[in-house]
Amino acid sequence: MIDRRSVLLSSLALAACGNTEAAPVADATPLKSIAPFPIGVAAMSGHFDEPAWVNLALTHVSQLTPEWEMKMEYILSETGDYRWEAPDRIADFCTAHELRLYCTTLIWYSQDSAFFRSLDPPRFRREYDRYIAEVAGRYRGRATGWDVVNEAVAEDGDGLRSCLWSDVLGQEGYIVRAFEQAKLADPDAVLFLNDYNLENNPVKGATFLRLVERLLKAGVPVGGIGTQSHLDIEIPAGRTRAFFHEAAQFGLPIHVSELDASLRSDSRIDTRSPRQKIDQQTARVAELTEAFVALPAAQRFAFTVWGLRDTDSWLRGGTRDDGKDSPLLFDAAGRPNPMYRAVMAGLRGD
Ligand code: 9MR
Picture 1 (spheres, rainbow, N blue to C red):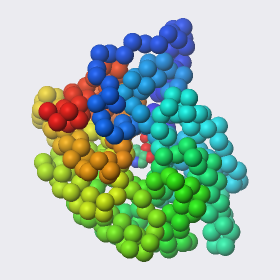
Picture 2 (cartoon, helix red, strand yellow):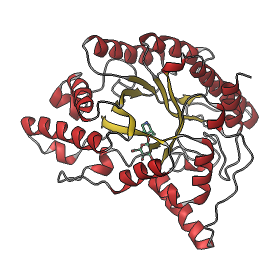
Picture 3 (cartoon, rainbow, N blue to C red):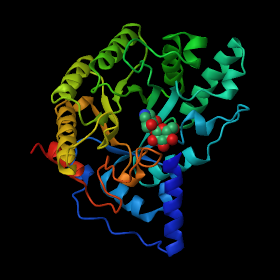
């Protein structure tokens, strides 16, 4: 919510200054010119009114993921109506600028809805199928892929989450059904199971991969593995590489779907200097990039950052924010951060 507000505020500030000219992009080699796979970024439709964002995005990325406007929270009203304005705007922006459109997310435990809660089980099942058919069907032919089910694994990695969807359709039943319906709605989109802390928490990573294995064995049309990669910079060296090695065994495309790397440590008294934290961050991001680059070409689906500039990040804002976190590739003015150089070095194999 906060990031939506800040986008609005920055667009208002631009408008107030009468600054509608495209801002110059700071000197940095375009990531998309180096990467032999798509580079993606999360976007909100409000960004399109901000020339500096548009310039920076079109310079560096070849794929967009709507940060929240293709989720149930935007699309589905309490009375069961659908709203398409912002998601259509994002899809049209992609078409106009020849960007790949990656969509998130059809079913997510954290976004159930008052509408679904009001339904009896038979109607619930019909509306579940209809939601997926309507949403995935609308972007058929334009969406390169979908996060069909997001964050199915329990926080600590011990089994799967319970949620509204699992209560009505079964612990794995809702996942299976979502993939089957998505396949019917858009047979050509690559269908992903997406989750976080897979590198950071080996127990969770293993539970996730066992789920993928069970689904594939049961013939469920899972077409890709999404690892959000909201990286914990304290993650021990080698762990990310180990996860990618395990994940690659299925031969499926892998999407680094939401990369950011917060410098903040909430869980301990941190006496390190800013420089030491940045070194830690760039080492982790470099390992992730190298692990992705090392995948067979057919398995490198895309490498997506969850926002362009630090000030675009969901990690900035709110009560925990000290205004100093730098979790993304570019600073507030669009200048490259050390993290940009870490990704660039990983892409170049330096
Ligand atoms: O960054 C997103 C934020 O703007 C939204 O308000 C929020 C709820 O839709 O989702 C955030 O993105 C999340 C993503 O969809 C799933 N993984 C965690 C991301 C950060 O919370």
